[in-house]
Length: 90
Ligand SMILES: [Zn+2]
Image 1 (cartoon, rainbow, N blue to C red):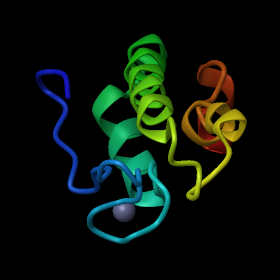
Image 2: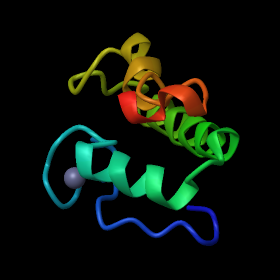
Image 3: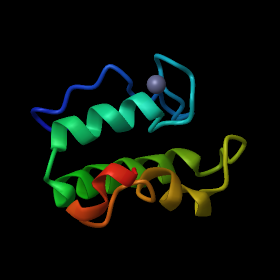
Image 4: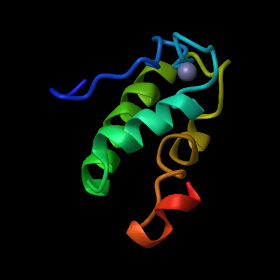
């Protein structure tokens, strides 16, 4: 996790379920925490979640019981607003 990012809802390995609420990570509370911590830095948020997605893909190798690898993009990055105009839509 990069310096300055501290989440109460973090992903467990290798399941990538939330260690606090048990939902697939990023869970709804984690999305709120991430949006608050990255605020207007959508590039930083995308970069952080892209790194998490790559980690999840590596964890999924040989362990696809928890989800299809090709669904990870939507799970990790699909919820991020594309620009500031639609931030409230997330
Ligand atoms: Zn959670």
